[in-house]
Length: 539
Image (cartoon, helix red, strand yellow):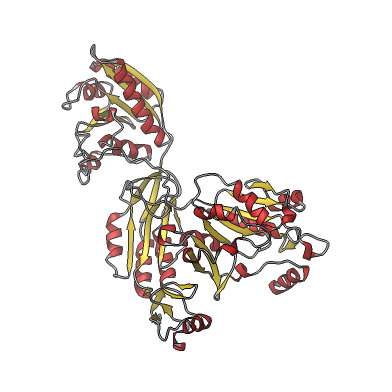
């Protein structure tokens, strides 16, 4: 059993109230605890010289795959995710994606579909190392392959398009139909940050259509969208003929998407002109959506692009158009939308009376040219946590000034002398709705790096039982801690100086220990002597 020290635990085990999860590197203390619980042997894995540990391998591949507007999350349990940084269309190099997945069975990467509509924070791809390690030569070869060409995964952001809308009418056309059509187009554009800049309602006549196209082009509208009062049946029909008469050209008529077959793709100079099929008067997904999304993302649409939309183009059984939306579950969704990055806030507790620090205030003390509290707020600012709440108490104005509070939400705790729990309650009560969790940070721990926060967020997944995430270094638990939203009622009931750690026992099954290479998670500075030793150690 002693020989298992330093090995990677292959299967999760329980030892009394302790839970040892698969993938944990076993320490001598862990072995002692397992022996005390009656275990005589455990299954472990050890890396060979030519292996690369799973987190390093996943992180390197994710970083090499990420392109513009794609953010790489910290690697955890052999997985590293890529998230959208802006609303737009995911662009996936599917040919190279296949090549990457063919390199070795230890390396996998899964993505959303190419041209999928995404929102900020939505997952674009996940890299997963299947065992506990991958062959180093496979990772290095795959990394070089990714770096040698354009991005594998990126986002084409939506641009604020000012579209022109033309509606033709005949004597039988109802006003309600025109209103419904305008509303459907406006809603589609709004989802992508665009708007209807100008609209013309004209007779269903070739000359009237041509005149309206010229007017909207002169006003700078792009794209120009045309709904005919009756369906366009071929290139010689009213809408295509009007475009040609205005001096434009029809690039393609028809598309292998149903509904949406009768779409016309045209151009007047450098302005796209789309003859929109009648099915787009409804908000249901149709071929026009695919074309409009690309145009709003600044992606040119050509004849060949339309002709290649057949795979997946049978849309008749899809009841509604997929719209980016916030999911209530950070880890999974039953709506068909890719998971998003969890929405995690940060609370920085900076209200204490600093009694052990002599005449000064520990948070205001100088450390490497800036106050202790500024080290903490800078590290949190650089993370993906938002919003960031700073809870003040003792010498509040000075602490706020030292923290640099322009992008922080400052919450004052008038009862700060009652202990840490009172400040935690004040911070929690000020959190907005709709969060998945909150990271609780201590203002006197300036050595905690941003990477620790990101790794906690990456590990967080309540569906998989990881709802309380704690950093550990050399087998010791530290700060900050990440708590799922489900625990907020319990946190709000805490009293005195016990802090949130008093809940670790009752919720042991939800705890995930996250190994980090950062001793700063174990060190606070309560006295002048401790801070002086820290300064001396850095010289």
